[in-house]
Image 1 (tube, rainbow, N blue to C red):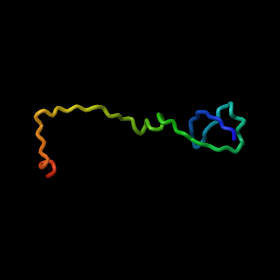
Image 2: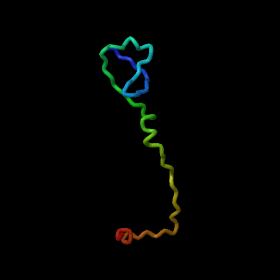
Image 3: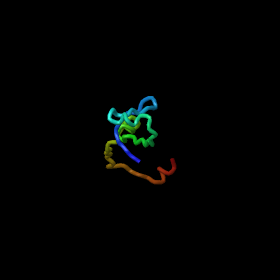
Length: 69
């Protein structure tokens, strides 16, 4: 089995072959799609978490009161 690798953008359920691989047109091929992780998740996970700092000086924690809620 011969293998090639190239980058392409899928559109309308089609993956275009680069011009140098046009000789593969009409051949039976096995296709494995790997999504580029950076572009695959950026739209779903645009937000990022930033560190949070709280001043707890003088804060009184009562376990019984917290559990009663």
